Image: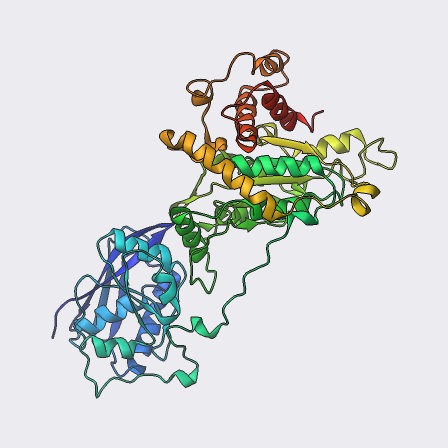
Length: 516
């Protein structure tokens, strides 16, 4: 008898991973399988999966009482990613395996002994490396994703039998399932063809709308939130969908964050870091957990976190529930979502650019002279009432988008393409990065008011227009700061060292265009 068998796994709480020691002990009483350490229902079902997988791998579990303890016991554990660690510890307790110390095991077990991929492998491997355990065993279908983590030593296997042979099992006893029965090789990504890269929508497709295009360019340059109000067919959705295409590629740190979130969300086929800013566009019927994150047990990331370092687009925004919209106020300010549930709290990064699109009224015809509009004043107030003042105050650019004219649609020359605009955005981002690096900031949208009124303070003549707007109560203190941030982005696009009165005036117009 080998005594207590041990292996390591990882428990994920949000994007944070914690090393979990798996202990297994074989008692002297009648057959049973006891699992301790706050397992959820999916993890509790591991007992039957492991029994079948071990038996079909030629290494049946002991017929006596098997007790498995997951340490720390106070940390909630969930999911099927502990299957392999529990199996290895149990077989080690029986003396069938001799696993090396310090190796982390992350895989689900099939009943025939095959190793199945699990979601969240990337953040789990990141946690293992940070915890000083770089040797990680995963299913073959997770090998590419796990290898994205710098410093990780990934060992991929297709079955428990293959792993057992390397851990000292009796070769005559071990049974290895054939790949012909539906197994996959370590480099086949579960038999799925490699996903084709999606074509990036081109900004040239937008007809007319020169003011809106310029506003989107300013938003991209400084990372600002934007609201577009206009009739159906004006191009609001097209502009929003083309915003990610002009944003710069993600750096290594941001790409690792974004890829980890999408791995935890269960998106298949992750074999490379996500370098392009993501785009999320939830339907207006989406619930708060779908957008913010949630669910039973430990909360999972929602659309706001999946849009991290990218764009969250809310089309027909007044159709969303007001509590769903107001729940975005926290991440708009802090760039992070902290979700509390009975099973625990999870924190997810959510530093996205919000794009809000809305019609001018419920019928959508309340533009110009609004001769065809049938909406009452009360209906219009109720329609926009779902967009609370505190939420709109956090949106830097608020622009009215007019109906496309026949000349713009059919005769005017096409606007600039994404390939022409993107270099200007990249140059503007580099200018602000050089200016803000000493403050630990990346974009103008992140600059706090104390810097705008301190080290980055503009000449009084440049801000005189804002002072008058404050006196007239048409601009709040938060709005004052946001106009200054816009002015810096406009100056960065123009290649200026600092904004002047003209840039501040343009920024104020972008801020108050809807009200006007």
